[in-house]
Length: 365
Image (cartoon, rainbow, N blue to C red; front, side, top):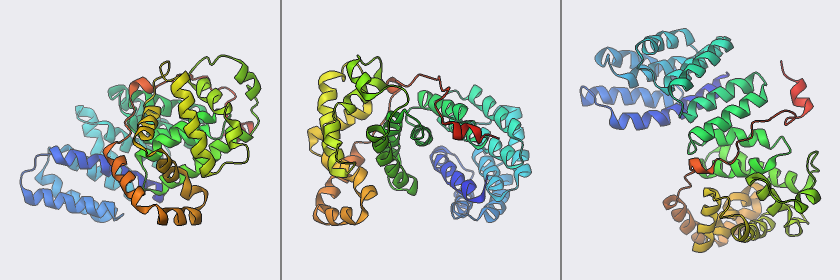
């Protein structure tokens, strides 16, 4: 794993640590303050400084799991994988390791080119933490590095099923699905991820992915079921119901994928979905859409979702005219976060044979 990716992972893990800090009892405020200095150093990318600080804190808090994890994490980010594992191994032996510990260990084994050990420690972590979306995410990344795309996608989908409100599995699943014929899932998972992580480069990149996925849905021939065949048949499952509803609205999008066309398309989709499939397939994302339509925010939401990705200059002009409306919508969005549920897991198909292109498969090591 390169330094950039390691740093991004460290920042992700720090988000988890923040919640742990809130409940952590410290021997003194001074020790806690010293620990926070280490966290700040790590968040700035200065892993060496963070290691030095955590090394000073640990003797003062010898039983503090959070300090041990943070020290191991700092070692991992700095590339000192063996020292990170030395910190973690006693926690595995004593049974005090949590999901983050298993993930850091897997990253370390990957760093020293011990892929089998990385997969083994992640599998052990999942066995002990079966609801950890974080570990399924890391497992998928390991498979992706090995170019085993089928296994990677399975891990991310299992992570979504186990921990439906953990966002990173949606991101990777969307990236995987947009390379296939089953772009409906790229559209769904990509949008969920953007709502979970709206203000990052990954979020912006995923908005571009959504435009690409809609382009592929309507303007790329499928090697499996043609649109005409699908429209004649009764939808057998949630995925087919979504695809059938979208393709039935092709006339709305026939002159191209633009923000304005997508607003019309998705509004008509929701009306059709509510009349046809909403009771059969209740789905949190579409309930979220319906709530926005009821409150008068759906058009603004779609501008927010697609406008800048499609045409930054045009979006800038639009937002200058509707800045107050967007500010009001942003307040609404913060008060109405999208929270996915276990009941949303309609994607249970794990038959991935032939899903990815021969070009990708032939590139496997």
